[in-house]
Image 1 (tube, one colour):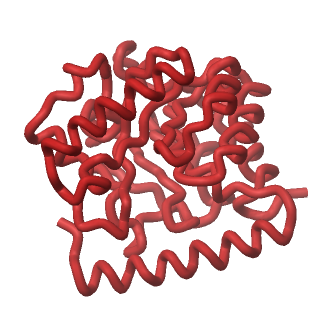
Image 2 (cartoon, one colour):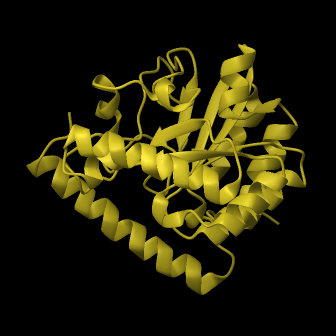
Length: 255
């Protein structure tokens, strides 16, 4: 029996469809290896870091290694170390330009301090980063690198900047579905391809079709629940947030 959408059961079904059809990679593995085909798993841990650990264990059971990006607010050294011990890659989900109201000097000092703190607390050589969309902010955190170079801080890759997505499928669960929509303000890349997916079952069918050579699969573990009541609560939460994003896009369009 198929599991309800956006549950750990359904996520397991997605994982099973991937390993039956593709090899999988972390962000830095993909960049350093120059692969032509495969699925790259990226998880943005915006909230509920225990959900990330749950997903990490499901992937470990299937010999999948993924990249987990933690915000300062979700970075817990015990959870991060446990996810890393499962073979996953840990990165910094930065939002320093937004946090410092667009002040580039304060933002780069904040970035350096936060990255160093994460490295010290976890004991890991964190070398990959990805911006947090911070949809309520008027600042795009990627703009920090218009005046600075992340490589000066021992960073190998930025998941948005360091990868050419033009010949890849970039599929994200932003907005609690897998299609590009008006509630997705910043989690976007330039690509020639778009998967015709809305539900996870659509995504599974797309993966099983084998029509894509390169897929970047981006999830937010907070959305993948166990239990009926948490799922209902988080569905309502996402719907409210999506509505607010649509209003914001109409009033203050994101460049």
